[in-house]
Image 1 (tube, protein in one colour):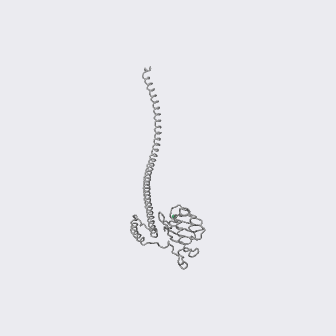
Image 2: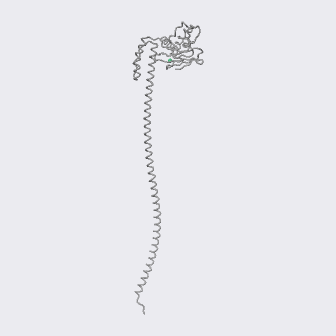
Image 3: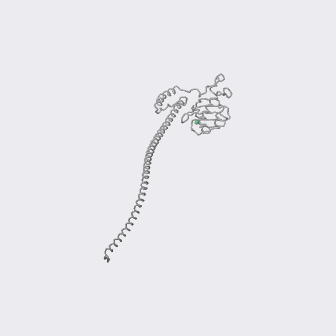
Length: 299
Ligand SMILES: [Zn+2]
């Protein structure tokens, strides 16, 4: 979490526990002070305006950055606590820093630069070394740590669960262990995230494969449809030709019909004519018969 508090101090070393207590939550201050008392705080790097620290909290190792910037105290911690305006870890880091700078300031009789890099042995001959910068390392702790380190690295290499760390008093070695445990936890989280991503990629690839297959099927269908369309076009052309031929035939039939009608009319006329001739011939025959039946005229 990251927080900002208005602060007129020019150096972080001027922030004493009373000032810190007056601006933060009482509960967070109590816990921060307890962390300092239990030696759970490590100042990683510090100067007048910036502190980098690490605190072994109740649930793991957290990293803090505290800065004086533009009349504000800006604190940042890797924890997820919502303690405002500053979490217990940042409070612990500030208290530890104050504890660390205190003897040197009183030695010099004025506010001095607390940076570890500008220490002047001539001015502070009897200043006790800052407690948190002296490795409080016990040989038994080191031996337990080294004994734990071997199987731990093997477990990390083989990607299996790391063995339980030895139970040590809070101190430098326990900080190392907490750091390694934390790194291993993050590595596992990253691996899980990677596996999840890979699974998602596989899913997407399978989906793409399916899409590609569907596309190929669609292309094949489109080609088949095109072939069918060409066949239909050819058939339509054939039908058009047949229709044109049929139209020609109809015209021909019409012409023949006209001819037949004309011929029929001629025939009818000829039949009428023949009738007339037959009638005339009949009359002539009757007349001739009557003429023959009459007695011959006296001659
Ligand atoms: Zn924190």
